[in-house]
Length: 252
Image (cartoon, rainbow, N blue to C red; front, side, top):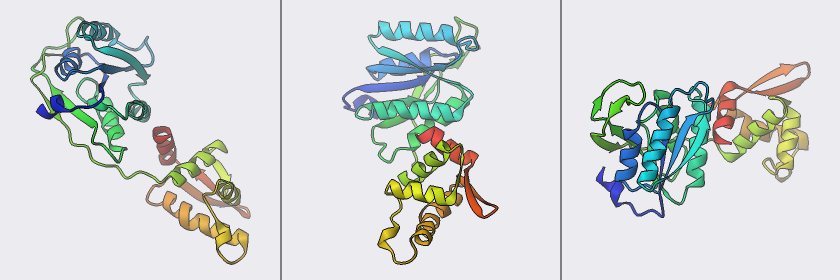
């Protein structure tokens, strides 16, 4: 991945999950002259068997004059990892960002790759895979693998993102406990300027509900599957689904 060493960003930022590896974090960071490495560690230290590796990684990074910072998430939670990594990318958006997909678990790799895909402009986001020279098993101070044979940049593919008004709608439903009357949702969206029925002829309430259906509800039901609509008595209620909750947790 020769192009990585030629990039001229303001700073070179690495994001790497910590598993039972040292070389696959330290060697790419050193080789490509990282200014800072965010180390993603498990948020429950009593469960985290990889903590000794964190100390060793930080020691070696410091020796190479590379700053490090710990960020925390449950290593089992794809949503949380995606959001944490996405937040770091947003924070470091003006820099060149290198996302290490090799140093953690498969869950880490999936979540971190997803985080990269959520950005329209990904010119300065570089997910990569560091191939180990050999695998030797692990029990600290031994690593799962030894050395780095090569690093390969991974192409990023765009994920279609929900429109801001869709996310705002989900946020409102969530704030109401995950369920809201359809007419109440329409009124809240009108107050926020997301729905504007005054520009159309007809009964205001009917126009407002029709606008909600056409511009919001139909899209969140399909293809996003983020809400469900049910009739209870004389009212229609809109509820957020697990898919909708995932979008909120990941993107907001």
